[in-house]
Image (tube, rainbow, N blue to C red; front, top):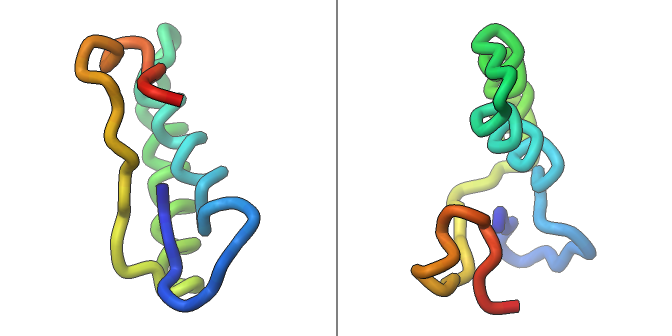
Length: 71
């Protein structure tokens, strides 16, 4: 999860950009150029929104391959 200190948001800041990049990286049809472009989009977002830190909620280690941990 991405957070912006002092400002609550209905969705974490830059979450769409982060998920797009992560999904690109795990895609069966991996496209390095596309992923690099998405990295640039994420970087631009975090700079514009002054994001200083990523925070991930703790998940069940047994579910690390599916991305489905404790809900």
